[in-house]
Amino acid sequence: MVQKTLIASEETKTNNKEEGTSKFLYFNIDVPFWTSFKVGSSVNFHSTYSIPPLTTLYGLIANALGLEQDDYSLRDDISFCLKVIYGGEIIEDYVNIFKIGEQGGTLGAKNKKEILGRYDKAKASKEEYSELLKLFIEKRGWLSEVDAKKILDDAICKEKPIYDRFGQPDIIRTQVVRERIIKPKYRVYLKTKNIELLKKIEFVLENPARPLYLGQSDDVVIIEKVSKIIDETEIKKEYTDFVDSVVPFHAKGCEIMLLPTKFILRGKNKYEKEQLGFSYHPSGKIKLPEKEEHYLMDNDYVVFEDFKKS
Image 1: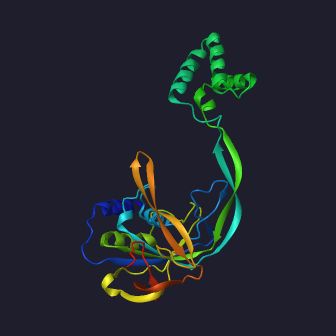
Image 2: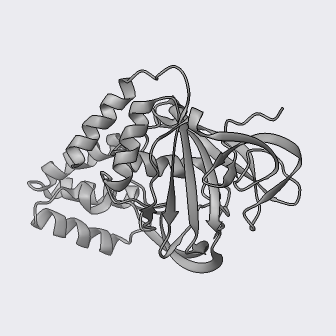
Image 3: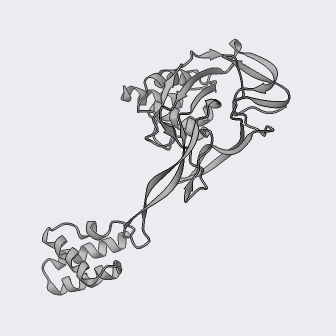
């Protein structure tokens, strides 16, 4: 199943978009335990967004398709809309964090080569051993000479690479407070002109390549009520002064959030984050200042991320 899904995903990337009307699909996400959508700027206190960012929703789709973690090749093909069925309850929890200490860190290639070379000679020369010990202490100056000698002796006796003994980073353990959302439930709407992609998404939502989660990798989710693919000609658009989804613009009386929508590769392992402002109301309904034309899907008025105010 996984291999077939992966192959299908590769084919999807090269499949030409169909010209004409957009196609739609929607499904529910049930979080049976908890989840968290970490605000990027938070450090010592891991606060959460009230709703999942679009990058998180795309990540769920990409994971179901079996794409690699940083594969954003299909992001521009999909427009998202989010309805919050139940916002959940936000609680605070303690999380263990492991950090690399300043005195640790992996040795550079030059130091590694130098020390490993000296290590080979040390096995046959007491003088070289003494010099190697000094070099060891110099590179890892926070160790006492006694401790350094013990580690060095042990490594040489067992004929293990000395680099593995002291080139590894120091690990510092700390605790931080993280906000978690208890048992929220969402409905996600997808819009695209790439019908082949939507067919594959429809399939993998019920037959995912990997276990699905939202937020952290252990925040498992249950996908429910996957709709059939709907053509735009089958969907009503009506003028209304309220909507039932999150909206990509400022709405009075709502929580306003600047959420990441996509990541763009700008160099080797360097990504630029695009963001967009969204409005969310805990009641699920947002009052608009004037009537505007919106999609009516399954008795809900919804607004997609690519909506442009008139």
